[in-house]
Image (cartoon, rainbow, N blue to C red; front, side):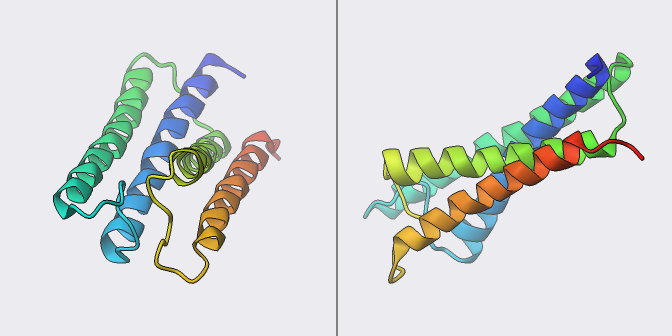
Amino acid sequence: MSKGDKNLLTAAFILGLGLLGAIDGIVFHQLLQWHHMVLHPDIQLEIITDGIFTAAFSALLLWGGVKIFQDARQNELGSSWRIFIGGILIGGGTFNLVEGIVNHHILQVHRVRPAAENPMMYDISFLILGLILLVLGYTIKRQRKG
């Protein structure tokens, strides 16, 4: 893989982390209101932790965009859509797996849908989605041109 393709993959991975963070924050935290970053009786703490989460995924999106711009200015950016889309999916899948394993299972700061009849089903589905995105991303990235 050329340096340009590696740079593109790295930027796409960072964008994928930020994109899935944005989808998580917008869909699960704000629209569906299933959970907050930290489940706590104090709503102010829940809102503050959601704000920190929003700042983190926003920083990732900005970082990925800046990386693309910098690498393009130095003429060190690949142009493969396979690598770009694959990298985004790999980054998104990694977000789901890491966030799900760390926050839902190890730290147990929240569940995907704690008020559900079977909240573990939602937590496992979140991990399965992450795994699907990861495998799909690697598959797309590795496809040969043709």
